[in-house]
Length: 342
Figure 1 (cartoon, rainbow, N blue to C red):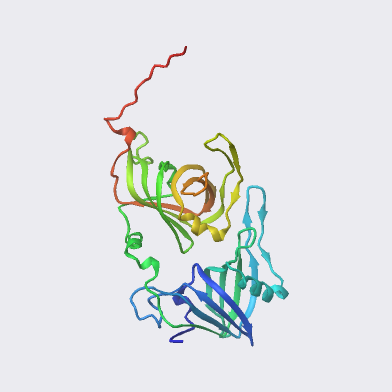
Figure 2: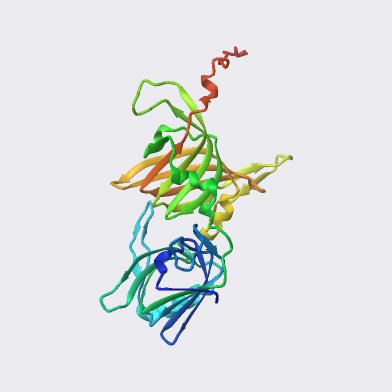
């Protein structure tokens, strides 16, 4: 192949990269991966920006699988502790997972050199097991090789429309979601970056300096804003059950549907607006929870999603307040309507 990067895993971004195949042979492990990103400091990237690689081969020489640990998680009813797999299961787990249609790298962490001259690394793998959680795969190896034939363009976060997040905003509200009114806020885009969930939204409402001026009563509209959920964990996305009436007044029952992780990204494209925010609470020193009701552009009703997630920090960023909200407009007034009780 044209490009070869040796012992440069730290100069790649593997978030949301897809593993298409895994081969274990002669103490070597080979991955075929798609959609990895070569960072600007990568020796094989001669561009000034992070570049996308649509297909690459990763080789771990003299590899040793140190552990596979299924992630723990919490529900409203019980706590599920992390579960280590047995060493006798390691190869079967990897071979079975790699044969799935859904097998992604969520993140890479703890890459470091050992005193023995070998290296250690941990990959968080999202393999869409039934509960919706993946596992942490820890490897040691003597040498890593990443090979590919070419670049397919700048990575998505090098696009100018995302640069605004890096340059900063005039206004930044940290852990102040309760001070905003997100009812009928339009969702323009959703994407993930470094364990962050980022929403580009419009038509957010905010009271004037709510924490600094408790007597403020004027509510303003923010035309464009970014909502960032850091260290986010999506607990559940589902469409609630409903009863629908057709044109002939026939009742159709729609069953509740819980979405799988592999369906999230396609479903995000259908999301239209935030209808309601519920159950926003701090549940520990560095963790919050929130429930959101979302309206979606569904071909089949009801076009509603319920989203439950946890995060360590929320950030809302915007540049200006565009106008008073419609109910604050002096030209708008409520009129009392007399109702005939007879």
